[in-house]
Image (tube, rainbow over all chains, first blue to last red; front, top):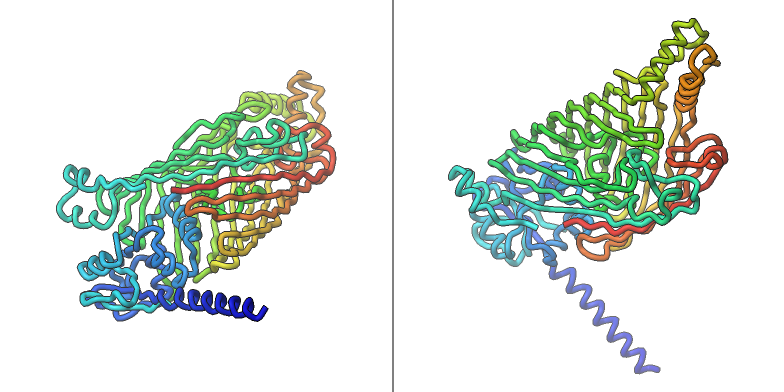
Length: 145
Length: 416
């Protein structure tokens, strides 16, 4: 009986650790090129740009959002944390936009490394990556909560 | 599905500047959506339909019915040059040709984005009559199996051919979208008593205000409508004869039964909320005819639900309300041919019929795969006496009695 309880405790601790790791791992940041004069953006700006509602930086210049690949955990994590949208909710949203001729989702890059490279090159682009992947050429304009 | 035909098309079409821009966006995009649905009704005396264009539904004509909600749509978007897009969407769904569903172009237009805030569009596009009119056929984008019928069957207008323009701007964190359009639609609707040819001249205005998870919308359409039909030509002839014969009330009734250049207004006030957990959709819509030829109706619904991860249960209450029901004074038709007299009585009686009902709906959406959702829904419709309540192919008993009708539906929605 006592041993059983110990096992259960061990399992619970293990599960807890997994859960904690899941959240700690996922620290996402929104990035723009070093050449972009934008110092920071708000959650509302991020939502408007990535959902195609108003693709403009706060100074009025054109913003081109980029997505990580379909079904990547980082992409799902970004949309859930930044705008409370699950993969299904995001797809439902875009199907409404696409099939009413109101726009198209951001173009998907091939990897996080690709994202950093493309954002660094083009001052109009805006992307998101895991905080640990931020490299010279890009700067963080918003920390995903 | 995306085709990387950028390079190929660009070699022929694009300037070097355009090539630089198209490295960001694909030039040609194919996409599609659909719903495969099945519905069954516990009342075989009339057809429940999902929109007013349908001449059959579930109950009397089909039971169970796999055609009520089944829709296929496919779309191609072509970026001809940067900022100029051509969009064509073909839809197959049940319309008024009884159980057939011939594919047709629902959208076919050129859209020019002057900048991020302003666009102009010409061609065919869906008339934004109500809050979700434009996306009402995309089951995957909706919480329920079908848009709430008590509002969405008020209008037979799907698309219009014309031009529109939109402008959007930010007021702090609030997004304001303004839109205006003009267009026409010639529409044939087959009914039990023959084909009605409608012609609509449409002026459309709508404004959406979005703030965070909240979205408010006001829509207004000013329409001039003609209804043409052989039997109605005879009706006008017969009413002219009654007027010539000096029959009491003939002239006043005929004046109230105009079917050409009839002013028709649609007004819609809507609100949507979705914070990723709770969601709400509510709308009050008005259909106002300046003629007793067609009934003026209001529709209302309140739909709410909650996203529990992949499961999203919802419940809604909706109402179809008859405004200013026509009541004609007595008309003596004995001075004209009995056949024509019968026609006059039938048409006049039809215009005085009550159209009212209430409905409760409960259902659940299950997002089982990415891009695929399953839904199950029960509609409980309550209709008073002496109305078919926008059902079709109804028996006399159905018309006369107060009834509760239950429609159970299941659907798979997909989008790719």
